[in-house]
Length: 351
Image (cartoon, rainbow, N blue to C red; front, side, top):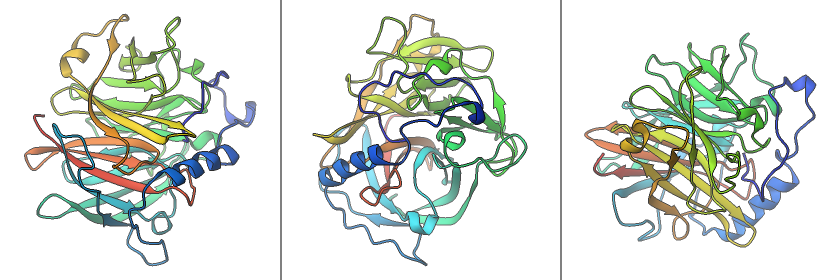
């Protein structure tokens, strides 16, 4: 979903679409303004123009020194062709040990493809692309709009997919794959009070099986600079808080790390600066024994600002592959011709 400008005040209720007003904030004038500012602010990377019969992704060059030195080393980037894929709006991402890349879109769609790497680890493209519609508990496709705003993706050890939605705040579980029916699971308590366009953007299944959930715009009482977070599982949630890196940043996604820690992707938007973001690492020790007074705060690994390509970064995934931990980021193009769907790939040392 497009990032928020300012703090939304309206709270969404856990009511079915037929009983709710049509929400403000989907594609339209506001998203166009955001995309226009972002398009003017970003450098051109020379991505190929979309067209019929094109490959779903092509490598693009990153500018020299386009990253922060440290534990996160860049391997390369892809420009995803949404015309070839059939949709954009990618908002949740997952990567497994077999280089299978899976993503969900806030248009109620999903895709899976194998990430093709060169001998040096650079991403070269996507192979075996498959796409489909997310479905409700009866197996019927989710109608585009209010009911289909998928924002986060995670996977349980048994293969069940978890998809978090906002506007109508809820989590669905897909035990038979993302093409199968998705039933409700109990959402973290209090999630229904999240602003309509700032719900559960970050959901991760940690290495020990616990779930980590972070709301984009729901602050704990009396702490407007923090965001409400939860750890545990349905029926066994421990509420805690998350501290973004700055007042204008909001959590946009999360991913588990093999060592028991987690990554959190943060992003912001302003008419002056366009899109900005950062990627932080939460150590396993900070997640080991949380309590209601715990405030999670990550160590910055990467700042998503020029000379890196700036866009609406919404998805992060990590996996242990070939003896190293790979980290992927994906951007949501908001279905705008002025934005792009990009995939950045990094190696994370020491994990």
